[in-house]
Length: 362
Image (cartoon, rainbow, N blue to C red; front, side, top):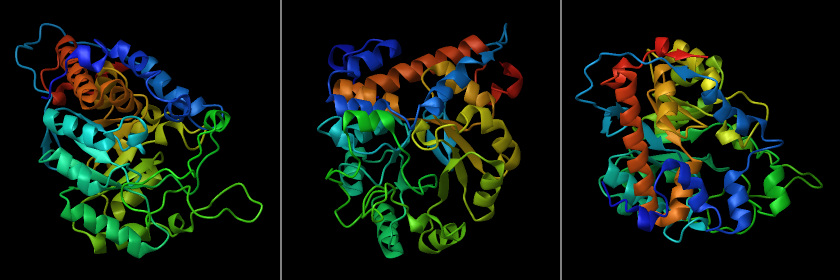
């Protein structure tokens, strides 16, 4: 694992991470990171769902050997958590996604990198070396542009395509509007000016919203992507068992139970609350991941016990990046791994297979 010197990273514990990050970046960027949509009910619900649940530990179990390793779509990883895709990391730290990729690769942690990265997907791949990485895809208005992104990701060594499905348009984000950070401002995108974000393009005359017609073509988009690439497809943004079933029926190898970190539909359920029904629907056929509200090792344990194969980390990674660049992310991953292994021991679970639904109470 990369060096994680707390004197460089700026924090000595997971509790100190957010505080170490605040103030190191402009307030508009900070509110963009921290904020959700509307009144931020879903943003708060994600964390509250973990607080409502408790773990029931087993005792007198031999925990002299603890193994947090797993595999994601067949690729070995050191821990059952991964870096969820987050945009514009260059606004948080000068080295942006390159720093994040270096730290993740050194730790054996999967990194998922956004279409809206500050550096090109090729630069990120070069920084991450042989580390595991997937590419998050936003559909482009012209499908040929979507194909270009996918093929570039293939050539650069990304091992899966993660299609974000929950952005037919951007939600109204009150905190972001109050602070004045605009997603349609001229923020440089590392993958090239010919590729657009969900916010780009003209608004309807006199309108407030930019609809994305390319997201409204039905589940056949997965069929088109499967014709484009041999890489496994992952659908991110699933909150209904019917959608999980449709994703698998159209060839997805995995789904991410996600509400976009509370940044899209305010009033959507916490991801942890809908995880069990989606696992029940497709868990024997595809891998199920979760993001939203994961902060501590005990949160990871609860999600695994309820059927997730792994969990994605969003805001905390950005906090770590702001606090100390690659060193900050390395420090964060080190602390989180140590805490999760500690939870394994305290729960009487020497392996991930020991986390079962019977261990969780609400």
